[in-house]
Structures are given as structure tokens and as C-alpha cells.
Length: 91
Image 1: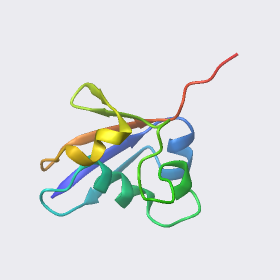
Image 2 (image 1 turned 135 degrees about the vertical axis):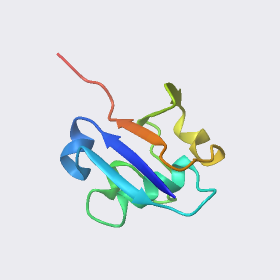
Image 3 (image 1 turned 90 degrees about the vertical axis):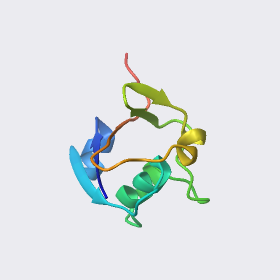
């Protein structure tokens, strides 16, 4: 199945604004983020050493914010959209 992952701010700089990924049926949000992160030098922005989404990553799915710890419990459907935001900072 195909999912789209849209990234903002620093994540956009590292992974591109929008990426489509082919993932197996029944995959979770975590699986899709792992597919996006891959094993490149920027992977550590999104995932930790245990292959979990970092707690500071803001994940949006179907107009709701999803806690990174819950990302493994939500199964995706074909053509779903996931949005990733880095932590908000300002001054």
C-alpha cells in the first residue's frame, strides 16, 4: 500500500516536504516513519536506537495528534497521510 508523509521545518530539510512510501498492508504509523527515516544520517532526528519515534516528534494522522508511543498501535490504510512536525521553538 502507499502512504504519504509530509514533513515541516527541520524534518522537511532532512527528508523533503512530501514523500510517498510503499509499505506492507497492515503497517502502522511507526512502520511508515521508519521507512521514511531509513538508515541515513538524519534518521536519528525521527527515531531512537530502539527504532521508536522520538517523544518530541509531533505526529498528525486524520486531523488528530498521535503520541509517538501510540504510533505502533494505529494501522494505516492505502493513501493515508501522516504529518510530522519537529518541536516548536521561537524567540
